[in-house]
Image 1 (cartoon, rainbow, N blue to C red):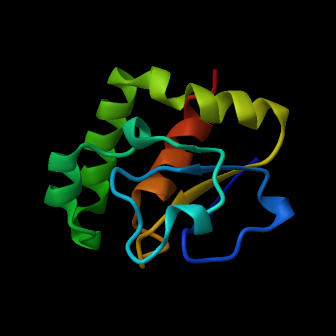
Image 2: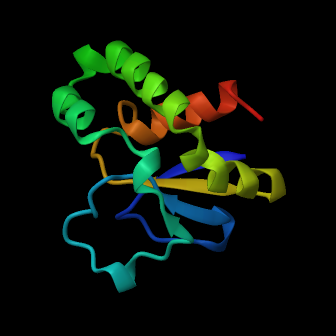
Length: 116
């Protein structure tokens, strides 16, 4: 099971393995205050794609298409998530205010449709 949680929400034991899936560290959070199992920068969208998308819901479908293409080229970056998900619950941590249109939502969709 893969769930999602904002970096600003409290960690709980129900989170299982926690992976930050952002290129940039979340604003206003000290590293020692964000419990993580790993920070997977390479599982996040490229800087160019992130800047192009700019959290614009009108670009969501195209963002997902481009992001999925990036993920296919860097599938090794997803291995820690896949490995942890085979063993139990995984939480993808993101920093966006938009809970519906962010890279963690897209990444979960990709992982669920490209199981290996």
